[in-house]
Image 1 (cartoon, rainbow, N blue to C red):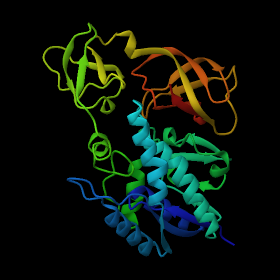
Image 2: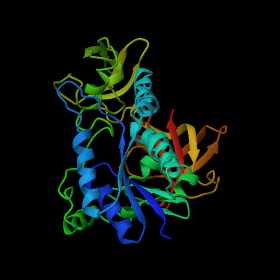
Image 3: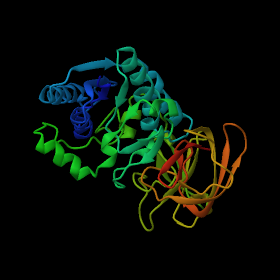
Length: 348
Protein backbone atom coordinates (compact mmCIF):
# COMPACT_ATOMS: atom_id res chain seq x y z
CA UNK A 1 0.00 0.00 0.00
CA UNK A 2 1.29 3.48 -0.89
CA UNK A 3 2.69 5.59 1.95
CA UNK A 4 0.39 8.43 2.96
CA UNK A 5 2.20 11.79 2.77
CA UNK A 6 0.85 15.15 3.95
CA UNK A 7 2.51 17.96 1.97
CA UNK A 8 2.72 21.41 3.53
CA UNK A 9 1.37 23.59 0.69
CA UNK A 10 1.91 27.34 1.09
CA UNK A 11 0.42 28.43 -2.22
CA UNK A 12 3.86 28.84 -3.77
CA UNK A 13 5.51 27.03 -6.66
CA UNK A 14 7.97 25.01 -4.56
CA UNK A 15 5.40 23.23 -2.40
CA UNK A 16 3.10 22.81 -5.44
CA UNK A 17 5.81 20.94 -7.33
CA UNK A 18 6.66 18.96 -4.18
CA UNK A 19 3.09 17.60 -4.14
CA UNK A 20 3.19 16.89 -7.88
CA UNK A 21 6.50 15.01 -7.73
CA UNK A 22 5.41 12.84 -4.80
CA UNK A 23 2.13 11.95 -6.49
CA UNK A 24 4.11 11.02 -9.60
CA UNK A 25 6.37 8.83 -7.45
CA UNK A 26 3.36 6.83 -6.27
CA UNK A 27 2.74 8.29 -2.81
CA UNK A 28 -0.78 8.79 -1.47
CA UNK A 29 -0.61 12.59 -1.25
CA UNK A 30 -2.76 15.02 0.74
CA UNK A 31 -2.15 18.79 0.56
CA UNK A 32 -2.25 20.80 3.78
CA UNK A 33 -2.31 24.58 4.08
CA UNK A 34 -0.90 25.78 7.42
CA UNK A 35 -2.72 28.91 8.59
CA UNK A 36 -0.03 30.54 10.71
CA UNK A 37 -0.74 34.24 10.32
CA UNK A 38 -3.79 36.19 9.13
CA UNK A 39 -3.46 39.62 10.76
CA UNK A 40 -3.49 42.66 8.49
CA UNK A 41 -1.00 45.43 9.23
CA UNK A 42 -1.09 49.15 8.35
CA UNK A 43 -0.64 49.45 4.60
CA UNK A 44 -0.58 45.69 4.13
CA UNK A 45 -3.31 43.13 3.66
CA UNK A 46 -2.17 39.66 4.74
CA UNK A 47 -2.43 37.42 1.63
CA UNK A 48 -3.28 34.20 3.47
CA UNK A 49 -6.67 33.74 1.77
CA UNK A 50 -5.11 34.18 -1.67
CA UNK A 51 -2.31 31.73 -0.78
CA UNK A 52 -4.85 29.24 0.57
CA UNK A 53 -6.87 29.46 -2.67
CA UNK A 54 -3.72 29.04 -4.80
CA UNK A 55 -2.74 25.92 -2.85
CA UNK A 56 -6.30 24.57 -3.13
CA UNK A 57 -6.33 25.10 -6.92
CA UNK A 58 -3.10 23.12 -7.23
CA UNK A 59 -4.56 20.30 -5.14
CA UNK A 60 -7.67 20.21 -7.38
CA UNK A 61 -5.47 20.20 -10.50
CA UNK A 62 -3.40 17.31 -9.10
CA UNK A 63 -6.51 15.44 -7.93
CA UNK A 64 -5.40 15.19 -4.30
CA UNK A 65 -7.34 15.80 -1.06
CA UNK A 66 -6.75 19.18 0.59
CA UNK A 67 -7.00 20.34 4.21
CA UNK A 68 -6.19 23.34 6.36
CA UNK A 69 -4.47 23.10 9.74
CA UNK A 70 -4.87 26.21 11.91
CA UNK A 71 -1.73 26.87 13.98
CA UNK A 72 -2.21 30.61 14.40
CA UNK A 73 -2.43 30.63 18.20
CA UNK A 74 0.62 28.40 18.67
CA UNK A 75 2.53 30.27 15.97
CA UNK A 76 1.94 33.55 17.76
CA UNK A 77 3.35 32.24 21.05
CA UNK A 78 6.17 30.03 19.70
CA UNK A 79 7.47 32.16 16.83
CA UNK A 80 6.17 35.73 16.91
CA UNK A 81 6.56 36.29 20.65
CA UNK A 82 10.00 34.65 20.52
CA UNK A 83 11.04 37.10 17.83
CA UNK A 84 9.62 40.18 19.56
CA UNK A 85 11.22 39.21 22.90
CA UNK A 86 14.57 38.69 21.15
CA UNK A 87 14.51 42.14 19.57
CA UNK A 88 13.51 43.73 22.89
CA UNK A 89 16.60 42.10 24.43
CA UNK A 90 18.84 43.63 21.75
CA UNK A 91 19.23 40.40 19.76
CA UNK A 92 18.55 39.66 16.09
CA UNK A 93 16.56 36.40 16.18
CA UNK A 94 15.64 34.34 13.14
CA UNK A 95 11.90 33.59 13.06
CA UNK A 96 12.16 31.27 10.04
CA UNK A 97 14.39 28.89 12.00
CA UNK A 98 11.97 28.89 14.94
CA UNK A 99 9.04 28.39 12.53
CA UNK A 100 10.70 25.24 11.20
CA UNK A 101 11.55 23.95 14.67
CA UNK A 102 8.24 24.63 16.37
CA UNK A 103 5.62 24.63 13.61
CA UNK A 104 6.52 22.81 10.41
CA UNK A 105 8.54 19.96 11.89
CA UNK A 106 6.74 19.69 15.21
CA UNK A 107 3.12 20.89 15.19
CA UNK A 108 2.50 20.03 11.53
CA UNK A 109 4.32 16.69 11.81
CA UNK A 110 2.41 15.70 14.97
CA UNK A 111 -0.96 16.80 13.55
CA UNK A 112 -0.33 14.99 10.24
CA UNK A 113 0.68 11.72 11.93
CA UNK A 114 -2.32 11.95 14.28
CA UNK A 115 -4.55 12.44 11.22
CA UNK A 116 -3.32 9.23 9.58
CA UNK A 117 -0.23 10.31 7.62
CA UNK A 118 2.89 8.15 7.49
CA UNK A 119 5.14 11.08 6.56
CA UNK A 120 5.15 14.79 5.82
CA UNK A 121 6.82 16.69 2.98
CA UNK A 122 7.84 20.31 2.46
CA UNK A 123 9.05 22.44 -0.44
CA UNK A 124 12.45 23.21 1.06
CA UNK A 125 15.63 23.34 -1.02
CA UNK A 126 17.45 20.77 1.08
CA UNK A 127 17.90 16.99 0.98
CA UNK A 128 17.33 14.23 3.49
CA UNK A 129 19.24 10.95 3.41
CA UNK A 130 18.90 8.34 6.18
CA UNK A 131 17.63 10.98 8.64
CA UNK A 132 20.59 13.28 7.92
CA UNK A 133 20.13 16.75 6.48
CA UNK A 134 22.10 17.76 3.38
CA UNK A 135 22.38 21.07 1.54
CA UNK A 136 20.18 21.48 -1.54
CA UNK A 137 21.60 20.91 -5.02
CA UNK A 138 20.82 24.53 -6.01
CA UNK A 139 23.43 26.46 -4.00
CA UNK A 140 21.64 29.77 -4.72
CA UNK A 141 18.44 28.49 -3.14
CA UNK A 142 19.78 26.07 -0.49
CA UNK A 143 17.65 26.42 2.67
CA UNK A 144 19.46 23.95 4.92
CA UNK A 145 20.67 26.87 7.10
CA UNK A 146 17.07 27.41 8.27
CA UNK A 147 16.58 23.72 9.08
CA UNK A 148 19.46 23.01 11.48
CA UNK A 149 17.16 22.77 14.53
CA UNK A 150 15.00 20.01 13.03
CA UNK A 151 15.37 16.72 14.90
CA UNK A 152 16.72 13.45 13.54
CA UNK A 153 13.33 11.86 14.35
CA UNK A 154 11.47 14.47 12.29
CA UNK A 155 13.86 14.03 9.35
CA UNK A 156 13.16 10.29 9.47
CA UNK A 157 9.52 10.94 8.56
CA UNK A 158 10.00 13.86 6.14
CA UNK A 159 10.50 14.16 2.38
CA UNK A 160 12.02 17.16 0.55
CA UNK A 161 11.98 16.16 -3.12
CA UNK A 162 12.81 19.54 -4.71
CA UNK A 163 16.15 19.65 -2.89
CA UNK A 164 17.44 17.60 -5.81
CA UNK A 165 16.49 20.31 -8.34
CA UNK A 166 17.61 23.75 -9.48
CA UNK A 167 14.93 26.43 -9.06
CA UNK A 168 14.43 27.05 -12.83
CA UNK A 169 13.71 23.34 -13.25
CA UNK A 170 11.04 23.51 -10.52
CA UNK A 171 9.27 26.35 -12.36
CA UNK A 172 9.59 24.40 -15.61
CA UNK A 173 7.88 21.36 -14.02
CA UNK A 174 5.07 23.60 -12.72
CA UNK A 175 4.56 25.12 -16.19
CA UNK A 176 4.53 21.72 -17.85
CA UNK A 177 1.85 20.53 -15.42
CA UNK A 178 -0.18 23.72 -15.92
CA UNK A 179 -0.09 24.68 -12.25
CA UNK A 180 -1.43 28.14 -11.45
CA UNK A 181 1.59 28.85 -9.18
CA UNK A 182 4.18 28.34 -11.95
CA UNK A 183 4.84 32.08 -12.38
CA UNK A 184 4.05 33.16 -8.82
CA UNK A 185 6.79 35.23 -7.21
CA UNK A 186 8.61 33.78 -4.22
CA UNK A 187 7.54 35.31 -0.93
CA UNK A 188 10.20 37.52 0.59
CA UNK A 189 11.07 38.57 4.11
CA UNK A 190 9.67 37.12 7.30
CA UNK A 191 7.82 33.87 6.74
CA UNK A 192 4.63 35.13 8.35
CA UNK A 193 4.52 38.71 7.13
CA UNK A 194 5.59 38.49 3.51
CA UNK A 195 6.04 41.99 2.12
CA UNK A 196 6.20 43.81 5.47
CA UNK A 197 9.72 44.65 6.64
CA UNK A 198 10.91 43.68 10.10
CA UNK A 199 10.92 47.29 11.32
CA UNK A 200 7.37 47.97 10.18
CA UNK A 201 6.27 44.72 11.79
CA UNK A 202 7.95 45.37 15.14
CA UNK A 203 6.53 48.88 15.31
CA UNK A 204 3.06 47.34 15.69
CA UNK A 205 4.05 45.51 18.87
CA UNK A 206 6.89 47.41 20.56
CA UNK A 207 7.05 50.99 21.84
CA UNK A 208 10.45 52.56 21.17
CA UNK A 209 12.20 55.74 22.27
CA UNK A 210 14.69 57.71 20.14
CA UNK A 211 18.29 57.82 21.35
CA UNK A 212 21.81 58.80 20.30
CA UNK A 213 23.91 57.27 17.52
CA UNK A 214 27.54 57.43 18.67
CA UNK A 215 30.59 57.08 16.39
CA UNK A 216 33.96 55.42 17.06
CA UNK A 217 35.27 58.64 18.62
CA UNK A 218 32.46 58.86 21.17
CA UNK A 219 30.71 61.69 19.32
CA UNK A 220 26.92 61.77 18.95
CA UNK A 221 26.30 62.08 15.21
CA UNK A 222 22.59 61.46 14.96
CA UNK A 223 19.47 59.98 16.49
CA UNK A 224 18.02 56.50 16.09
CA UNK A 225 14.32 55.68 16.34
CA UNK A 226 14.70 52.64 18.59
CA UNK A 227 17.90 50.69 19.32
CA UNK A 228 16.18 47.34 18.82
CA UNK A 229 15.73 48.05 15.08
CA UNK A 230 19.49 48.02 14.39
CA UNK A 231 21.71 45.03 13.74
CA UNK A 232 25.49 44.57 13.72
CA UNK A 233 27.05 45.50 10.37
CA UNK A 234 23.96 47.40 9.21
CA UNK A 235 24.69 50.26 6.84
CA UNK A 236 21.31 51.29 5.42
CA UNK A 237 18.64 53.20 7.29
CA UNK A 238 20.86 54.96 9.83
CA UNK A 239 19.87 58.43 8.71
CA UNK A 240 23.40 59.77 9.20
CA UNK A 241 25.05 60.88 5.99
CA UNK A 242 27.86 62.93 4.53
CA UNK A 243 31.26 61.45 3.79
CA UNK A 244 32.04 57.81 4.47
CA UNK A 245 29.27 55.29 5.18
CA UNK A 246 28.63 54.26 8.79
CA UNK A 247 28.26 50.67 10.00
CA UNK A 248 26.59 49.55 13.23
CA UNK A 249 29.12 47.97 15.62
CA UNK A 250 26.89 47.47 18.65
CA UNK A 251 24.13 48.82 20.87
CA UNK A 252 23.33 49.21 24.56
CA UNK A 253 19.66 48.52 25.23
CA UNK A 254 19.80 49.88 28.81
CA UNK A 255 21.33 53.19 27.70
CA UNK A 256 19.32 53.14 24.43
CA UNK A 257 22.49 53.88 22.42
CA UNK A 258 23.57 52.67 18.97
CA UNK A 259 27.30 52.58 18.13
CA UNK A 260 28.68 53.04 14.62
CA UNK A 261 31.97 53.33 12.79
CA UNK A 262 33.24 54.47 9.39
CA UNK A 263 36.22 52.11 9.73
CA UNK A 264 35.53 48.83 7.94
CA UNK A 265 38.51 47.31 9.78
CA UNK A 266 37.10 48.28 13.20
CA UNK A 267 37.78 45.40 15.62
CA UNK A 268 34.15 45.42 16.72
CA UNK A 269 33.10 44.37 13.21
CA UNK A 270 35.40 41.31 12.96
CA UNK A 271 35.66 38.10 15.00
CA UNK A 272 38.05 35.15 14.77
CA UNK A 273 35.96 32.98 17.06
CA UNK A 274 32.35 32.69 18.06
CA UNK A 275 30.46 31.32 21.01
CA UNK A 276 27.20 29.48 20.53
CA UNK A 277 24.41 28.80 23.00
CA UNK A 278 21.20 26.72 22.71
CA UNK A 279 23.10 24.35 20.45
CA UNK A 280 21.28 21.62 18.56
CA UNK A 281 23.12 18.74 16.88
CA UNK A 282 20.98 16.72 14.47
CA UNK A 283 22.61 13.28 14.53
CA UNK A 284 25.55 13.60 16.95
CA UNK A 285 27.79 16.21 18.52
CA UNK A 286 30.67 17.42 16.34
CA UNK A 287 33.98 15.63 16.84
CA UNK A 288 37.01 17.58 18.12
CA UNK A 289 39.08 16.60 15.10
CA UNK A 290 36.31 16.84 12.50
CA UNK A 291 36.58 18.94 9.33
CA UNK A 292 33.86 21.56 9.55
CA UNK A 293 32.77 24.84 8.03
CA UNK A 294 30.36 27.35 9.56
CA UNK A 295 27.81 29.72 8.03
CA UNK A 296 26.96 32.69 10.25
CA UNK A 297 23.95 33.95 8.30
CA UNK A 298 21.83 32.77 5.37
CA UNK A 299 23.82 32.72 2.12
CA UNK A 300 27.01 33.88 3.86
CA UNK A 301 30.27 32.25 2.77
CA UNK A 302 31.23 29.05 4.56
CA UNK A 303 34.23 29.64 6.84
CA UNK A 304 36.61 26.85 7.88
CA UNK A 305 36.55 25.93 11.57
CA UNK A 306 40.06 25.25 12.91
CA UNK A 307 39.05 24.28 16.45
CA UNK A 308 35.84 23.34 18.21
CA UNK A 309 35.47 23.33 22.00
CA UNK A 310 32.56 22.13 24.11
CA UNK A 311 32.13 24.59 26.99
CA UNK A 312 28.97 22.94 28.37
CA UNK A 313 26.08 20.88 26.99
CA UNK A 314 24.49 23.98 25.45
CA UNK A 315 27.54 26.18 24.82
CA UNK A 316 30.31 25.64 22.28
CA UNK A 317 33.15 27.79 20.96
CA UNK A 318 34.35 27.75 17.35
CA UNK A 319 37.74 29.10 16.28
CA UNK A 320 37.76 30.23 12.64
CA UNK A 321 40.43 30.17 9.95
CA UNK A 322 39.34 33.63 8.74
CA UNK A 323 37.73 36.45 10.68
CA UNK A 324 34.01 36.81 10.10
CA UNK A 325 32.40 40.23 9.66
CA UNK A 326 29.35 41.49 11.52
CA UNK A 327 28.76 38.56 13.84
CA UNK A 328 25.28 39.20 15.20
CA UNK A 329 24.05 38.05 18.65
CA UNK A 330 20.75 36.18 18.33
CA UNK A 331 21.43 34.99 14.79
CA UNK A 332 22.24 31.36 14.09
CA UNK A 333 25.58 29.84 13.11
CA UNK A 334 25.25 26.52 11.31
CA UNK A 335 27.97 23.88 11.15
CA UNK A 336 28.52 21.81 8.00
CA UNK A 337 30.62 18.72 7.33
CA UNK A 338 30.91 18.88 3.52
CA UNK A 339 27.21 18.91 2.44
CA UNK A 340 25.86 17.53 5.72
CA UNK A 341 24.30 19.84 8.32
CA UNK A 342 25.77 18.88 11.69
CA UNK A 343 23.69 21.43 13.62
CA UNK A 344 24.43 24.79 15.16
CA UNK A 345 23.43 27.31 17.78
CA UNK A 346 22.58 30.90 18.62
CA UNK A 347 25.44 33.42 18.48
CA UNK A 348 26.23 34.97 21.87
